[in-house]
Length: 377
Image (tube, rainbow, N blue to C red; front, side, top):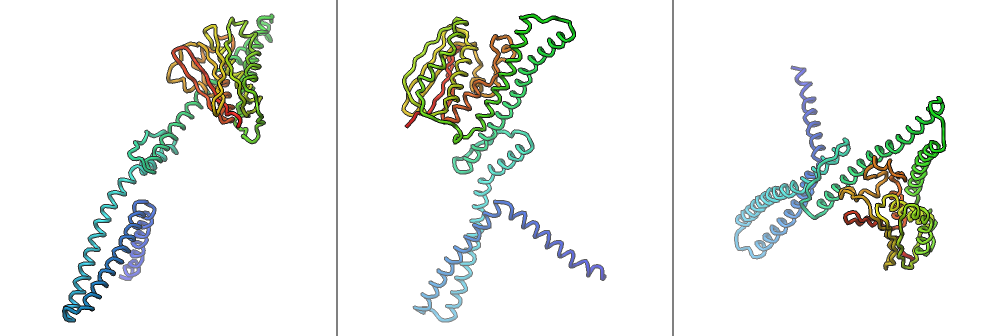
C-alpha cells in the first residue's frame, strides 16, 4: 500500500512531463503556432467587443430604467450568457476556418521539408507542383530551380570527371607505352615517333594550363581585374591576324565585319576569349568560311563568331559552355587539333566576370557563338 502511495506522485509527474513534452512538440509546429496566435487575437477582439456591447447595454438600462432591479439583473445575466455563447461559437467557427486555411497553406511547406530532407540524404526529389503565386509559391518555384541546378551541376561534375579521365588516360597511356618500348629496346626512336610523343605531351600541357587559367578566373574578383578602356574592334583585328597562317594551312577564309566600339575590360582576358572563340571555330569547322562580326549596341558590344560544323543534338547545345563538355569525346582523339573541352568554359567565365553574356545560335549545321561586353559610359 505504501509503495502505491509513493508511486502515485511519480506517475502524476510522468503524466505531467508527457503533457509538457507534447506541448513542446506542438509548439514546434507552425500550424499550432499560427492557430494559437489567431485564437488569442480572436479572444481579445471578442472580449473587447463583448465588454463594449455589455457596458453600452447596461448604461442604456441604467439610464432609462424601463424595468426593475430584478429584471435589470436578469437582463445582464441573459446578455452575458448570449455573449459567452456567441463568443464560444465564434471561436469554434473561426478555429475551423483557420485550421482548413492553414492546413491548405502548410501542405506545400511540408512537401518542401520532405524534398529538402531527400536532398540532404543525397537523392534528388521530384519537382513540386506550384499551386499559387504568393510567397510560398515563389519559394516552391525557387526550390525547384535550385534542385534542377544542383542536379545539372552533379551531372556536369560526373561528365567532367569522365572527360578528364578520358582525355588524360589516352595520351598518358601512349606516352608510357612508347617510353617503355624505347627503354626496353623494342622500338627505336625516329622523327615521326618523337613528333607524336610531343603532340601528346603538348595536349596534356594545354589541358593543365587551361585548367589553371579557368581556376584563376573563377577565383578572381572584379576588384582585382585590371580594367581599362579598350578599342574592341582593334583588339579583335589583332586577335584574328594571329590565325592567318592556320587558316591558310586549312584552306579556310575569314570574313570580318567590325564596327568601332569602346569597352571597359581586362585586355588579357578579352584576348583569351577572342582566341578561344577563333580556335573553337577553326577546330570544328567543316566548311571553308568563318565569320567574325562585331556590333556596337547601346549598352554593350556584341561579338559573333560563325562557322559550319557537324550536326549537334539539340539537347546538348546549352551545354557547350560547360567545362570539359564535348559532343563526342571519342571523335576528338582523331582530329588534328585535340580539344580539352575547356576553351568555351574559359570564355564563359571571363565574359561573366566582365558582366557580359554568352550564347549559341544554331540553325541545322550553322553555328554562331556570341558574347557581349559592357561598353564604357
